[in-house]
Length: 522
Image 1 (spheres, rainbow, N blue to C red):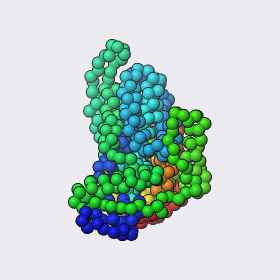
Image 2 (image 1 turned 90 degrees about the horizontal axis):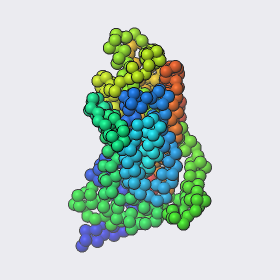
Image 3 (image 1 turned 45 degrees about the horizontal axis):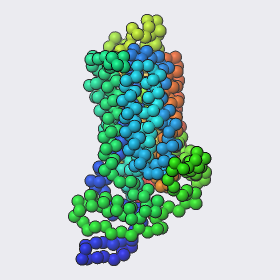
Image 4 (image 1 turned 90 degrees about the vertical axis):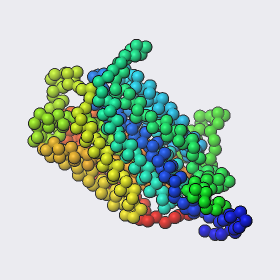
């Protein structure tokens, strides 16, 4: 950090600094906490849109006449939408701006969610859930890059884990909201649409509301300063940095008068020239821009990093989402088994007996419009543990490093997933199932790794591509369970658990994974 002179009459301190040093000078204060809260809310709406369907398929099977296979499709279709659109949103966020993508996609995703709540057939609700996934991807992936670029290298992982903690808090309310909304007996007819509007439909809309709140809040924030700086607009970058400084210091400290050094600009021979997409661009020109933005991720020196992060995302999502989608329904079956005195049986035996009952007596006689109170209780406990886990990770990640955290999460999750099929005590099965699902705690760490490993001009695309592979894992997991749970339940848990153990080994190959307190990098 080089002093460039001081104007005492104006109480202005002038310093020549790199971009990262400029962010350090803004302090870590109310601006950062507010931004973490808003970004966490945006990530939460993506999580709620995804997880809400797990409650819907457990209570709407009569309304929509759902088979187990159709439940798997409905659970996976949001992920399919995210997969299809991830590349597009990553490209647009890296070339046109993070904020320009996040705000409109949040608004459109909420509109799609509202529409899906009025659908009466399996295929129509599937179409609109696909559109919700397609649009919500435009907010969930770029927001990681957006948040990270407001923070210096030393505080970036902590900020991203802070946003993950907000997600955990939001998910903590999911079973509470599900109980308050779904577990009601009211219904009314909408003659114009010829549907019975039931509580589960309202639940879909409620889970989408944070998206509108996040979009409105985002209008009060500027574009990410690192994105602006990387586009060569130093003046605008300094305005954003000074604005952050004023908010964090409540205007009590002298104005930051900085000169950003050109050497901070990331030198990369593969860096593309940024250019806006105009209506005059043909399809071939747009395709060429997308290719130029994507190709470096699959070439040296980024190929190994891309493959590693994508593989970790895939394995984590298979367990975290693929197994979670059936969690409320299976948990409800375990609770029912306990109530009738089945205290010495495995989880899979309960699933098999439930399937035989439906086959013999008909699904319409055995489906419920609500869940047992104990089911909501266990779901709440799971979300509470997740929230505490993310909070703990955010606190210690700068001190212990990423490797011990990832190894602990993956190992515990993998072993628990395999043990579920052997334990003959239903209560123990519930807890092992929940421990297996806590692989989701690793997601924030993996995303922090992705933000850290790639330069600004590839960052949003890298996160989007890695999340795309994560969603592929979700689709694989949900459809695998939809096909296998009723007939090969043990195989579902063994596959998911084994993937977690494989991820344990892969974690050792993350570059700089042993680094603890991270120094500021130029």
